[in-house]
Length: 342
View 1 (tube, rainbow, N blue to C red):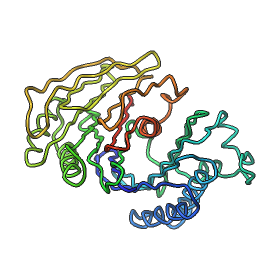
View 2: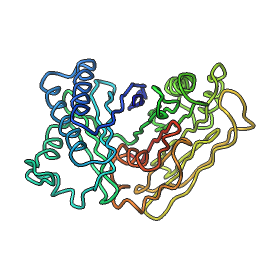
View 3: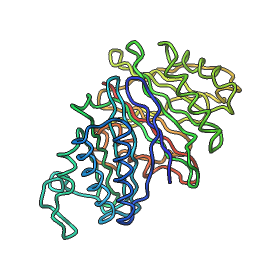
């Protein structure tokens, strides 16, 4: 399957990505070649391309050897100065009870040398990992030309409906004059027209002047009037005030999740670009140990953080990938974005 979008700080630019089902060695080789081609496209130097090749081969090899329903996403990531390559490896395998031991060289459960995870950590510019016995493992690794940027305060994933080449779900992240905002969008329907609506929302979001979420949603509503429309929501995380400011139209779920519980945020009925009764902004308290999670209706809301010990302390990318794996619906486009106070 193919598709996937990524928006990265600070511009919130939209980049393509490709999903692979990784169950045999031939597919693992195809993932590695795709990563190497992308490295050339984004301008990684030869030594970092070689590191990326090792990381991708080890991650894909681990899925072939150990995983059930292993998938990988290969995509570009960007900041204001340069571009890199990110791989996301997701599985429903046996999981690992002791990550520290598993990452150490020499530990193996398949009769191999046991150097895979250790090599991934060493060769990556940045990586993060979470695993739960009986549920599986999520690995995210990035290769940058030089020193990696600061870890992202927000990240997301999208995946197309099975059989489609593009996803009608999209997300974006921006820092507009100190306003740290995230967008989750679900273009109506599926396929190219849904993707066009979602992509227009992303472009409008990145171009809109700094404003509170309700004002941004109003702009997006006007900009989408030539598309089939979309459900969308914008959240703004204010560390100084300890608040999330949130405005949405349509069926986008937004939740503040902390170790002590979860609180849903309100999106009003409507279709951005076509019909709305009102756009209102709601404020919710947030603590440093909490996250904001937003997703399309291609992700069910039965996901429970208490079933994943330690997950809320991991990176937004790993959290988003875990939710997509266990709560995403194959018969619909699925999108998740996660943010936390910087």
